[in-house]
Amino acid sequence: MTNEQIAQDLVAQFGEDNIFGIVENYGLLNVTTTTDTIVPLMHYLYQHPTFKFQFLTDLGGIHFPDVPSHEFGVIYHLHSLENNVRLIIKLYVTRENIVVPTITGLYACANWMEREAFDFYGILFSGHPKMERILNAEDMDYHPMRKEYPLEDATRQDKIDALFGR
Image 1 (cartoon, one colour):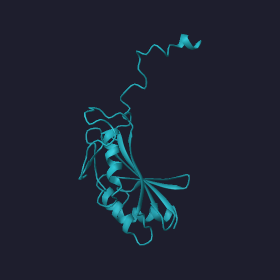
Image 2 (image 1 turned 180 degrees about the horizontal axis):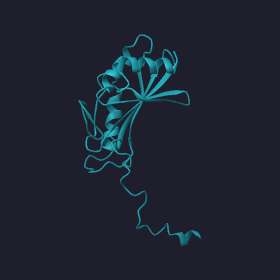
Image 3 (image 1 turned 180 degrees about the vertical axis):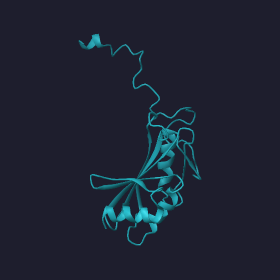
Image 4 (image 1 turned 120 degrees about the vertical axis):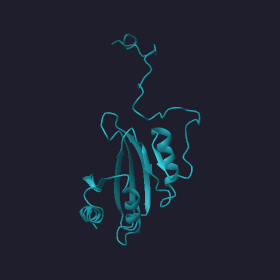
């Protein structure tokens, strides 16, 4: 089973409008999909008699504030233990609609991963059984991993260039 075979099968099953951005980085197949396709795609990959992507290695949020219509995204890392093949699936959403369907019905481990993506990026997972913060304080009114905040406190006095001989 090669990455090209997987890519061709996914395009044949879901169409070029739903499976696109196909690239191979460091031997890992990367595909991009849509929010409407992610749940059927995950079920297809899980139940496929050959592929058997039955292990969700990781799920994480991303934020690209300067990319119109792709400001937020979710990256899924799947692994077929039987075939020892990995697959990365990406999807992007806009700032106006930061909602992605949950995959907790298929991968129970996605529960905490989706909560973490919500906690840090504010990505909502529709249908999630307990969409609330998992690591940060419940009363926080922001999502700290968004690239909307300065990297350093401009009022700090211990980082003045003159103190470092610059």
